[in-house]
Structures are given as C-alpha cells and as structure tokens.
Image: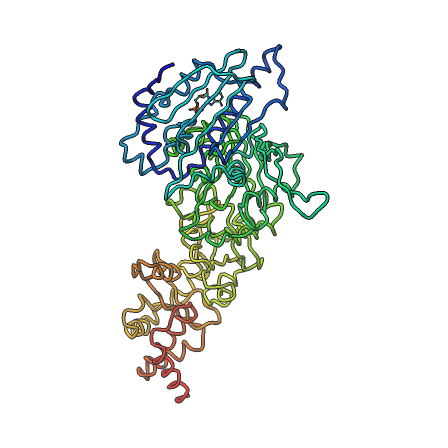
Length: 625
Ligand code: ADP
C-alpha cells in the first residue's frame, strides 16, 4: 500500500509541533493514556447496552512498556480499537474543523502551548518520537491494521496480524540532542512520575513491569527481576463517597498533592450533579504559605476533565479574595483539550467558579459560627486578604465578604464580627465607632477614644494598614455608618452644644497657636472628645491620619497629608496655663504650643519633626518650673 499524505493543514500543524520548543513534552503520555482510557470507556458503554458483551473489569487495562535497547516506548490498551477506516480518518487528519484558527505562526511558537491551543491529542507523540506505529484491531472485526508515520511527510496503512481487540502504539524515541534528552521516557521512575502527575485517577489500571531486586535465598547477592505493577491509584478521592472518607484521608491527600506542609483547616468536598456536573475537592490551609503576600504566589485550582489533569493552576476558578484555597475541580463536561484562552470564556467554567465561590464563603461562615477558635486561626492567616477583597475593584465584592470580617472589640477584648457589634449597639448609638493605631495596646491608650468609650459604646480597633481603607469602601453595615473616634463630628448630641460656647471665647488664643505651628495644622480647637488628656490630633476631611501614614509609606510616595487639627481639652489644667500665657507671656505660650503639638504627634504614633528642639524645649520647661 502506498504512502498517503496528511491533509495540508495537518501537515502545517505537525511541522509546527515537531519543531517548536514545547516546554512540557511529557504530556504526550497523558494524551495517549487518555485516548486509551476513552477507548476502554467505549467498550464499557457498549457492554452496558449490548447483551452479548460482558465487561469484565480485569480484562481492561493500559500497559506501558519501555524498551531501552530498541529505544521504544509502547502503550497498549484493550479498548475498542480502530478499523482501517477509522485509522485513516482519526489519525490522518489532525486539524479538525476550526482548530487552526491561530493568528500567526510566531504566536504559536512563542506561546508554546500547542496542545492547549489545538487539541492535537494523539499527535503529541511526535514531540518525542520520530516514528509512531499504531496497530489496532476494532471490536467485532477479524482484521487488524498497522498505521505508521515518520511525521509530516505522510503515513502508511497495511494489514497486520493481531490477536486481541485494542490498540498498540509504539513510539520510536527521537535521538537525544544537546538540549533534549529523550531517554528519560525510557526510565521507569520518570514514567511512573508522569503517570502519577497527570493520570493517577484514570479509572483503569495503568500497568508497567517494574524492576525490583531481592536477595537470593542462599546468599547475599541481590538479583533483579521484573514485576507487573499498577502505577495509578485509579479511584480519585474526590469521586469517592464522603462517608467513606476520614479527616485523615483528606489530610493525606492534601499532603500528597503538596498543597501545603500544614494541616488543612477545613476541606470542602463537592459533588454537583446539576446543569453542569463536577466534583471539587477544596482545602482551606491552616497557615499562610511563606510567599502568600508576594508577587510570586500564584492562585489557582487544578482542573481535571474526567480524571485527567488538563491544567495545574486554573486561576479563573478562584477569585483573588479566596486565593488561599487549594484543591481541584474535575468535570466530565469539560473538554480535555480546551485551551487556556478558551477556558477564560467558558460558560461552564464560570458557573463552576461561581458555585465554588459561594460554597467557600458559606463554609467559612459556618466555621465562624461553629468553631470560632479555628476561624480565628484562619483569619489570622488570611484575614488581610479578605480585607483587600473588600477594598479591591472599588468594592465590587464587599457584600460577599463583609460578614467574614473580624475586628478587635474594646468591650469584648477579642475579635468580633460586624453583625455582633451591631446587635449590641444601644438604641441611641448612631454609628459604628472605630479607632486606628499600631497595636491594641496603643489604641487602648489613645486619648481620642475617651469620650466614645465613656458613653459606654464599643469601639473596633483597626491595627492593620488596610483596615480603614476597607471600611471606608464598605461605608455602612446594616445601614449603620462607620465613624472614626478621631472624626470631628462624633454624633454624640449632648456633647456638641456644651463646647459651642468655648470655641468662640478662645478663638484668639487658638488662632495664635495655629500661627505658631506654621502651616503644620489646619486648626486648633476645643476638643469634644477629651476627658483626662490635654491634647490630641485629629483630621478633618476624607484622609485620616492613619491613611496619610499608609499612603506615604507606599513606594510611589504621593505625599498626601491629612488636614490635621490640634484639639485641646478645655477642662484640663493645662488649658488655664495656656490662657494665662496668652495674656502675659507669649514666649512661654510659643514653647508650650510646640511641646503640646509634639506630644500629640507622639500619641498618634507620628514622628516628632525635630527631636532635638523638642527635647531642648522640655528642658526649658524644667528649668523654669
Ligand atoms: P481526540 O482524542 O481529542 O479526539 P486524538 O487526535 O487524540 O484526538 O485522537 C483522534 C481519534 O483517534 C480519537 O477521537 C479516537 O477516536 C481515535 N483514537 C486515538 N487513540 C485511540 C486508541 N488508543 N484506541 C481507539 N481509538 C483511538
């Protein structure tokens, strides 16, 4: 029988593939095993409907045989096989309709993900082999055929003897080059590794004769011998019944998969049988990976199509705010050869992602409710990511995430949810109050909190940079507005009027002090919030002092400053001394103004602008006292 040509576009694609640098040549094995598994599936389904056919599980398997001497790798399956026609049709044409719609060849070479782009399946064999031989006998046929090709110049088909139904594919491996070592595909351990990585959960046994050694009965000599082993585990844990699995099984799987070295805090095992069928096995880690908050960290879930790994990190399955989730999704409704680009637009994938997102949230909420200690562990590790999630994308996800937030409460002395805070609010309390600072201790001592705390209101402590930004994005919770204890209007009615009078009375003094501070502050005024402390700094307007600190610490320093206000407590002894100095000794007032301002900076956790001057001023006070 003469040589047949590949169809023109098939040839073009083959050339591209053979010559391109394909970074993951090893996937050829995945492709061939997957075809073999499909072929066995076909017999399996036939047996379900055909009375004359019985499916005897043990008769069906895939076998991998490396032959170092011949430099061949053979993959045998006991599947449905192919007729001459099918060999011709299936293997003679690669490019099924539409698969060659790439923009230009450079893109393909650079993009290097040819399999992903075209779904070339079987042809992946040419990435590692010079000659590919396919011998096949179709179910119910008594003839067998051999298809052979050396690549893009064409193929031959001829009749051949073959006992049993099924297909044998033999790859004559390419010669090693300087950059490429093809011998590795003859190594048992390498082959085992590839099978484990991509095809562990193929439903049929993948067998290989594995070299072992044992001591001879009568001596110390070790002898090598071969023993057939099934190298895949066959049943994926995520397809097992939840009732059959223990926490330990899940933990082992988590480790086996190298999702982390810690223990998973929670696993989520889903079997969805709706418009789209899929299984998912998700884990919430207990501790943060060391690179979690860095650029290097890559989110994503493994994506399987019916037990065959098609993508190691599918980022589209998991939103950024849940980027800590590890695990996989397996769906028989996804095509094995779907490309990355196509995946992004895949409707089914979006649906899965949406469901997963919902499920993670509800599981976190139930953890929060049922096991607060565990939830706090989670929150300590990943809470910051949740807060970023509230803030990012202009708050697009804030509604989803707000109930996952926890903040330290001045009253409870522990982390509380916003719902818990609101449920405890007395009727006359209008706002959800918060205070910002470096640590819980620092905030505890913050003069600004005095009045609100005195009222008996609970205050949430914001100790992370992102906190105030996230809360500003959230704006309200259950229609209650958030209010900083440093804001000008605290919404405490009775306090407001009381100070109205004082303000005007001392205007001259305040103006003078402001002048002295030389543009550093916007205003000096009577404090409505101070009880025992003499001074504090607050801010008017949108930017709080905390926010100023955060923004100015960023690499692209934008030099944003808050409109700072120096508040003075009119009931404090110091206030009388200021008034007295204003009337009698301006020099003294200048000195006191400087000291009070710097004290306010210190309390606020801001650096003193001129420490030497400040210290000298303190000495002056000591000397005159
Ligand atoms: P795909 O698997 O995406 O359809 P392939 O190029 O891998 O594309 O295979 C083309 C076709 O060849 C398959 O659809 C199948 O019908 C047939 N085929 C490939 N390998 C085998 C096999 N081991 N046994 C039976 N048929 C096979």
